[in-house]
Image 1 (cartoon, rainbow, N blue to C red):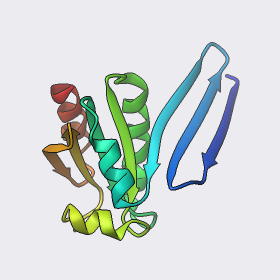
Image 2 (cartoon, rainbow, N blue to C red; image 1 turned 120 degrees about the vertical axis):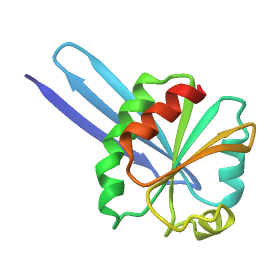
Image 3 (cartoon, helix red, strand yellow; image 1 turned 135 degrees about the horizontal axis):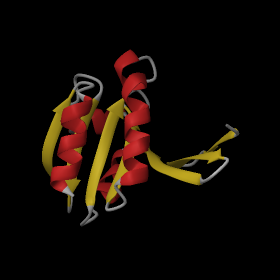
Image 4 (spheres, helix red, strand yellow; image 1 turned 180 degrees about the horizontal axis):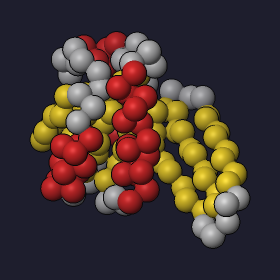
Length: 133
């Protein structure tokens, strides 16, 4: 099976991470935005669509384990927006939302928090996304 993987990260205050996976039969795009800073974060969660926020740290093992699940969900659940916040790079956001464990997933609509999942509980994460869309 032919596979080609390209990763492109654009560095800016509102960073967008784009991963393209090319298989012999299809091309899949994954869109998970990397957000830095409280102002940018609040703009992203203000959407009327479901916004799933992954609060993570680069040194966190469970965060690395669940990252492919978030990417897959962003491919399959087009009605939701997916963003990631590195708690070490955006301590203002982590503090504002009381993040004390990673990974923590928060779900927002119109800027209002509607649910939280703490830990790498893949089943609960997937169920919450599907129930809230």
